[in-house]
Image 1 (tube, helix red, strand yellow):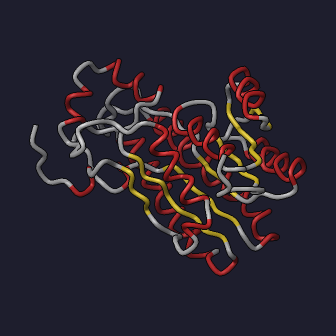
Image 2 (cartoon, one colour):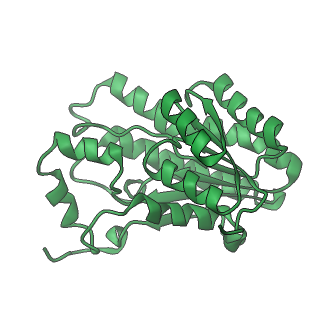
Length: 255
């Protein structure tokens, strides 16, 4: 067991699968006291028992439920030191602006952007009192790149996460609070696998653009989250932290 987060209280949303699950396990291994928020109550209860953590069933688009999540962390452990705002949904099919419906647009913004706004607001209430804290918001490599294989609602939401994180990072830097946007490339998560299963040629289309020639493992992204949560990143805020296998730096990638 490590000590990089020893005694810190961390809240993770979307903590029952993929990047969130890998990060939950990594945080506990590094000494954090953990509160997991997720819509999957059954998986959450099982994970909390495994990690000796606290689970709260939460709809991250509901302001009262989000406030209750962070209040639980404070009431249970006495502080809120880290917020990894990671809950998201992915589009299961292409989303050109010419074809996407308004209901899909609103749903994507609510879950992927408004939830981050709500979680940041709830976490800041405690962090400002403490004069310390690290907030990590899950954006995407698509927040900094245009994609010909359009998923316009998702891309726009993640661009919003990036802009929101940048502004909060600047605003609260002198209060001892760091806010960064994590921008993962494609990851072998259950959500990503569901998308790929719906489009048989999607994997090959994506791999050709990744210089490293593969998707990231959730544990690799969790290592980046740990870095941003820990004191090792004490001079990093308002950043777009790319963990993308080189996609954003690539022009032409050989097949």
